[in-house]
Image 1 (cartoon, each protein chain N blue to C red):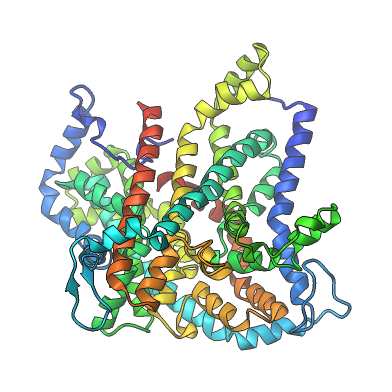
Image 2: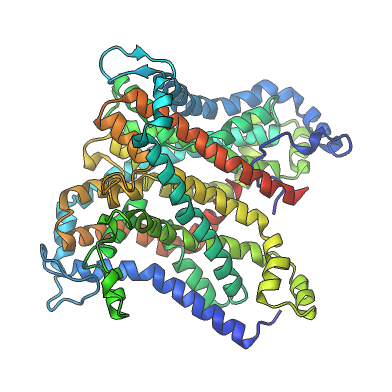
Length: 318
Length: 274
């Protein structure tokens, strides 16, 4: 792992007196390029500022107004935020996104660890590398396609019910995405399909970097699969676990494509997530201020979930 | 280390199960696509008379030719510019270490966590204001901005790991900052730039939310946006929907088969770095 390969989320180690000598020297040598250097960075910063930072500030601004997108807006202070956190119609999507977190994040990462630990010794074989390529496929196709494909698999005559009938479980067969009780887990199932292969392959590359002697030592101590997993594998892939959790958590909280095509947020509000609600409120209902307040809340929600995970993985590399 | 026989057995079995789980959905839409248009088959059922013509029909009604052109135009508008801007900024932050580089980097990294939903509402009104709503520019320009956090971060990681000696010897020879970039470091950065190009192309091709909100005409959208519209029209005709999905996925499959190694590596590195 390269020392630079992780987003620094706090002050880096150069505050310490001993290490940074080399770095300071390097910087001094190039000091003359300050202005020229900024010219190199400026175009990227301008595009980022114009099309990301400016809209973000505008979202915050909109969130304090009552605005239908056409006429003049009306300043309402924090009223939109109060509604976001009290109205069940808006709080529901936030809760749903936390439930999706289980399916998009917890399950793929847990299953990914198990799968990766079972396959990592054979992953370098020809069959292994062909298989890792195949299980990566869902990562490459658009999420919209995954949503359409699974919309069909989970339908009443779909494969999922066929399999259930084949093993004698026809009693529980149903239209999974249309049932209030099962729609959200069914959407979660799509997330598992999209993310499991990715997590497995990523975790397995992490395991490949662990010193084999550690496993030898664990074997000599008589460690079984579980003990070995806990003592050697998990500490060795903490960083990769952190990456998986980060990527999948963002996918869960900011989910839109899959939900939009598979259920549209329904039935009722059963699968409405913040992304869907923002789209409906802003572009169909024309309640721009309210949608913006939910969008700002979503931005903070993602940060609140992601930042602790970053800290967890950083301790790894002192 | 040599794996024991039972470990190998369990490992293979597990991989096989994962592969079936991954591939079965594609098999299902493929056989479904072969049923007569408008019929309602079961999920996995080989038709009596495979309707290969469905794919042609889907190709026609999805206006596949126009879609490929449109998506390609968007990729061509987004990716080269993004590569140039991200490489230059990554060079400035990672190698020149310009004053304020750390803050600048943090500002970009913040963007990595930003959900598109957080900015899509003002993007709509901005696009309307400057008159690019419902044109491909409404997708291209914001995407360049949205790719800057990842692109800069990715390129910075490369430049920050370059040995100082390369830069120093060039400086001793009196190279200007531009020469240093253009003649010395740009050729050395070819690998990471190529990987970044692959990643940004896929992400552009698959971009849905911006296409949905900012461009109404499906033939002006990205592939994912067009697929969403196709589903809206043909949601009730399952065989045609499946055939259309396969046709629209075809370019992705072809690229995946040709570039599988690079794709998997790039996506893995991309997530570890990002």
